[in-house]
Image (cartoon, rainbow over all chains, first blue to last red; front, side, top):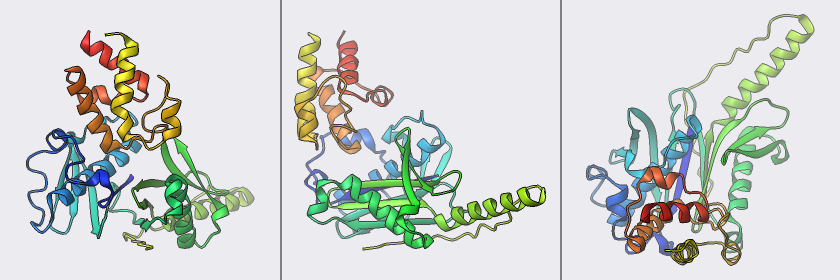
Amino acid sequence: MIGNDIVDLSDPESSRDACHSRFDRRVFRAEEGRSLSTDYSDVQIRWILWSAKEAAYKAARRVSAGVVFSPARFVVDLDRSLCGAVWCGTRRWPVRVRIDGDCVHAVVNGDETTAGTLSGVRRLTAAELRDPSEVVRRFALASIGAELGVAISELRIEKVDRIPQLVLAGSVGHVELSLSHHGAYAGFACRNPRIDAAARISRRIAVRKAARSHDAPHASISYPSRAVQGDLR
Amino acid sequence: MEKSEIFEKVVKILTPYVKSQEALEGVSPETHILDDLKVNSARLVDVVLEFEDAFDIEIDDDDVDKVETVGNAVELIEAKIG
């Protein structure tokens, strides 16, 4: 299960005083952020923790559409390298947060042990700020297309219950995809499409062979444990 | 408090957080707060806290989760203030 969230620290709504005076008390628990480096400012810590919670919520919604976004119930436990987990009850969501200049990007992959993650971040141009939703979709498709070696026209994004998913032309099923934009940044994360696409292509070949030979369809595909980071800035 | 008065106060509270002025100009009870007005999820926390202050009520996260439209917010507040 995949989720991502991006925060532009330079956006006015990310500034220290932009939030309601009770925001931090409502959203965070006292223990969150204690293990983070003291080099981070209060504002950076606020949005590091928030992005991790939001990314975990997006991943959790793929399991259950009825999950409630109660930020305080998504408890962030990060080490000094900004890797760790978000806990929601007994469920653990592995998370990695990257902070680069003004950009905070959190990626959750609940299935981290069996599949890699492809993710990317891009700064928007002034013209692109007019329609960041469209830009993040095109950015994700271009990045994933490049990873798979297929044309963008072979890919499309569909939304089911407001949850985006990537569909490869001629393929059954979908690849989990998470999109996010805030301020001047757009980001995405998806299950490594090479793994999913390879599995699907293998299944299609197996089904076609079976149809010809009347053998039972099968697919033999190994799922390497690797994470791909596609920072495309 | 009349429902129309609650609606007006709700829209006034939402206004600084709205990213789509076009949607705001045509705001109605059916207007979706996240999808139409483009209020982001972090700002929604601020909006809820301002609802609490403006109407002297408490709104828990389970209540917030059921609010999708401006009308949902008005109905929730109306129920809370009795």
